[in-house]
Length: 236
Image 1: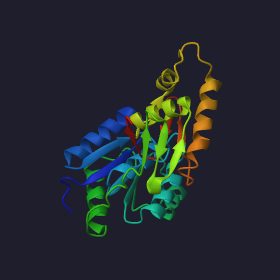
Image 2 (image 1 turned 180 degrees about the vertical axis):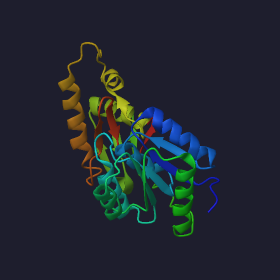
Image 3 (image 1 turned 90 degrees about the vertical axis):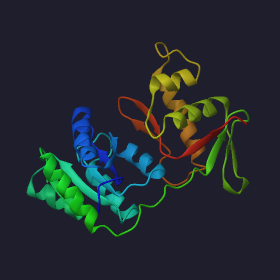
């Protein structure tokens, strides 16, 4: 399979290393989405087609092995290349058992990584990657309603609507605490942290009515919160 235009995702929490690896993959002709953790990958895959994931194991939040196992169940045709500093035999075995197509130990030279990615892509089932699911829910800002399929509606409070709008605008990246506090009309320097946590918890509970499967809002350590569902915005 030619590298040209093939969309792949790189999940690596160290920004400098992520940029370096992403550069070499892009140099080989791939369309690379650089992501810092599993939650960002989940959000990306819901909106963008992808053929292969290059996955670190030592990630913030959910460990890479757990991410690998989930991907193998939810995306059976997705290529998974583990690229990690964990090189012990039992760690390699664990990676293979969780469904990885290839396992590389850092530091891997760019040519080796490029060759492994190309080899895994050649073994994948033929055909384009599946199109991302459409945004079935729309947040109507003026009426503060989350509208879904089949005329389903979910009424939100002013604070819930403001939080969801901010989260949706930043997705698939996390919205910072500063942004979310501002959305609530607060001053970040004096706003109590637990008030934001309570507001997010209430919104998470409300959104469970629209999206009962899985966690709708995830904490992004050291940053803020990430909306894991796709939500369109409308002024009505």
